[in-house]
Length: 460
Image (cartoon, rainbow, N blue to C red):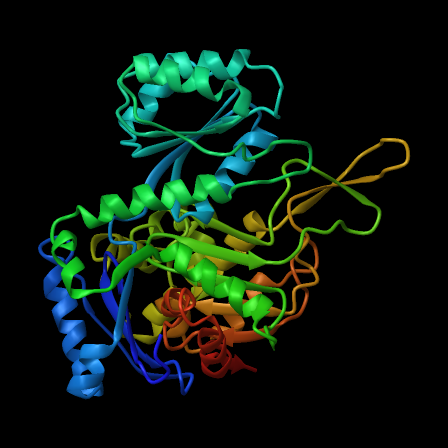
């Protein structure tokens, strides 16, 4: 990429189409903005508005020569199901691969599946199935049983097989006999303690991008851009890993956690090596340095009714210093109008309390946990990642960025009694830059790292 070339980085979301204009040479964000998304009618309309914003910042020559890249979550996230042999190993590893690729998991099945379970996947309108399980050279019987049922089912979703590779040819043959589209990936758990999700994630992303580009309007924007590179969650994951690790001799921040709170979901990204707590033995599927989880029942708008159901309307009302009737009406308003913006002090308190619950619940689900055991020589078992040593927490997403006290919200992700950091440096992504830096990192990783380090807002 020429040294003085500018970059125009876009994100097609279901609610907003966002744009960031950056100077890689100066390691500086020149402009960031957004417009209402038009992906349900014609994505080109929102794109043109964002490109006009970029034209106002750049000279004609700079704009014409700028690198123009985009990410997208406009399809609402790829609706996925994971089928594995054991819930503690293959299903957990499969979920990790699906989330890492930007998927949205609607169902998980374990063991020898049954026909009614597959009918449930059809009812959920699952768009892709990640089928995994079994160590290399292990038993194939359950895998072939599941493949035969999938082949005979009415499901039309493509299947990614990422299990015991010695059964791959038989699985593909069975699925082909039922007219199913099948992709073969490396075994995601080839042996004990090994996690290998890269190939499966790559195939998920490829299918995702084909789907969103074929959406109304997005096929028409390709000629206006250099490329739609990846799903938005993958872009954020790439940015977070770069920020944690550093590159080209430039140090990163070190291990970190990102909370992304939205209207429908709360996403948590962590970047830390898996390590055991003192005196504990790690059990279950291995976990990689970068991990993403998505909580579809934790959001401030369309998912707020599920938040109220989980936390209790009475508790949310008490924490917000409003009546239960006010809280019930406030939640109903948010579900009915996903674009609702709080205009009163009471409504802002409601948003803060909802966000606080989302972060606290999502953090506890994302982090590992300890279980006491009576086994000889080992009194503690650890499932998942020990994040207690993480020193940096970053907040992004509208509810966090626009909150009056984002530091207080992010502290909900720090707890003494679970495997989360007790204290950490807190930052806000006030420029919505993480997706953009994940895109820029594909060609200018050092510039992307510098921009992130300069642009993150430290919170007291």
